[in-house]
Image (cartoon, rainbow over all chains, first blue to last red):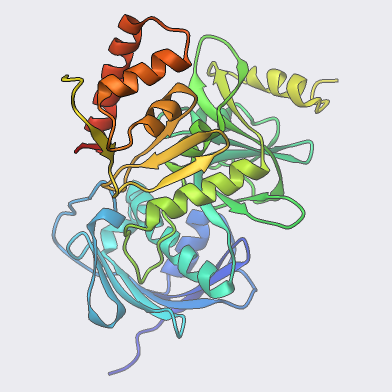
Amino acid sequence: MEPKPTAEYRLDLAGAVMALDCHPPALAPGLASWFARPSSPEEPHIRLHFELVPHADTLELPNSLLKTKTLQDGGRFDIADGLITGRFDPKTGHGEVYPKGALTRGLLKRVMEQIFYQSFYSAARAAGNGSFLLHSSAVIAQGSGFLFVGPSEAGKTTAAINSAAFHVLGDEMTLVVPNPAGTLIEGTPFNGTFKQKRPGRAPLRAIFLLEQAAQHRILPVDPAEAVSFIAAEVAPPVGLDAVPDKSTVPTMVDLAANLVDQVPVYRLECLPDPGFWRVIDEHFQLGLFP
Amino acid sequence: MDFRTIYKHNPECPVREIGSGLVIMAPAGETTHALEDLGVFIWNQIDGAKDLEGVLAAIVAEYEVDEGTARNDLQGFVAQLEEAGLVLVV
């Protein structure tokens, strides 16, 4: 049988690089456009054959791809009864991913993005890279990185929109990059619908736990509460060849605990306007408003 | 709630000490619970040997609080721990 034509797209996330051999070939420039990132020139740590599966059935979307993932022999996985299937061998760093074609249409791309979280963790493991994904919006102001953390509807996108005067890394997922000189944050291309983001990386100065309120205020947070809050927003560090198990949540808590140990955490009560940057400026003496 | 009941920590719940607080992970592995100050004190009193009357006495001895208030608060707190699966009846 003739091999199917493919085109390569490489995605570099905090130095963990995945190469996607895409079929149909048009998927490669499609991903570049969705992610607003050209293919990376860096050598990949993992390589995936990434092939869309034609289908006629209507998709039933699960709330969580991870909760509906099962493993079979030979490193095979199945997510949501065939929604995305594949195989990955961590020893060789090679695998295959077969998402149903409808996942590339419109907002369903947001669902397909979740397979890239797992692909990232596989690539990060292969790269010996301790970075992780945190459900957050992220902004760089005066060279300092700030994370805004919260569950869905907490106001992450609003905070990102109201940070347009600064360098917005994203409103959905941020890479947290451990570094001997100090934790860094790096933007991800996830949530392709949010166009106001730009790639970048900066030292992490503070983390804000978002709370909608009637005024802008920065308040202290007990460390245990900060860890519990942040742990819930860590994208489970599960690779393509794995499913969540008893160690997953403790690992998420440990990642959050290490982060809270390195970086100050505050509660940020805020209105849906840019005024919170004045309280941040005052608190950190950034000189944003001369 | 019967204050002669003895509770113990659910051994299926991992615990992490964070500063002076604790983060306890629910047995289903999906939620985490942060405890500080009085919550940590009560958690440490739930030792599988002491009944809730004993826990209550420890609270009243340690904190400046009247027994009635402490009893109500303890009942509510233990109910939350039990509902979350963090403690079990011995």
